[in-house]
Length: 76
Image (cartoon, rainbow, N blue to C red; front, top):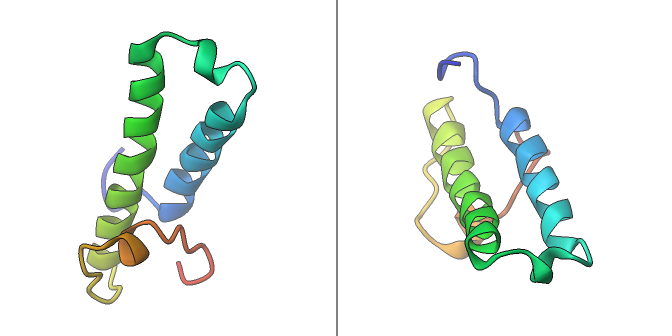
């Protein structure tokens, strides 16, 4: 996959899957490395989506929680 073919929708689908995993009742019983990996991926995907929105012609997004972790599907 290349940047020109990657869309934020693809990333949002992955984020939704990770959110479902985190919300699952058995999540806290998983090994520490698994839980950490899932949470880390979820956070980093927000950062990747923010960068992708910007390089695809979006406005500059400051490096703060509101801008990066907004998971804004409507403007993509």
